[in-house]
Length: 182
Image 1: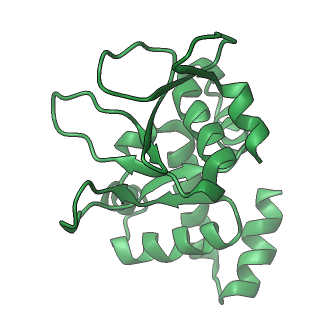
Image 2 (image 1 turned 90 degrees about the vertical axis):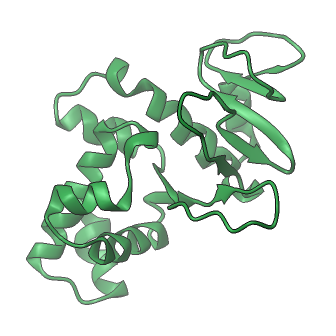
Image 3 (image 1 turned 45 degrees about the vertical axis):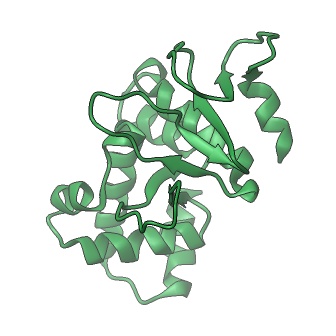
């Protein structure tokens, strides 16, 4: 599917060359094996040895093709937040790409969880919370409610914990139930 998207569908969006295709695969592979919190446009630009503008163009095309989600940061006030968009992969691309690279699911599990959460809540316009150093904050905000995605129990102010297991608590939502939102 990715082969068709990159070589055929993206060709319809814009004129692409072999270098563009190679860079697109490098970006996707980097996204697949990296934690969503450690990937930035400049990091990806460094990986493909191009400038951030090339990365932005490729990500925009991949977003249009439904391969990636680009999330805006959450801002509490009218102050402009100068932070890049968070980049997540649509399901099941992270797992498929990582498997092809020989990376086990356990190594990318956190990214897959976040991909599942965002894929299934994207129509609700989730925003990611910009974290400060040495401070734990919720991962996402949707309609004023905060969500922490993962099986950890951070003790910070969040409305809901989204976890893999089927736990029935007032502030815990099983990830499987989030997948029913689509």
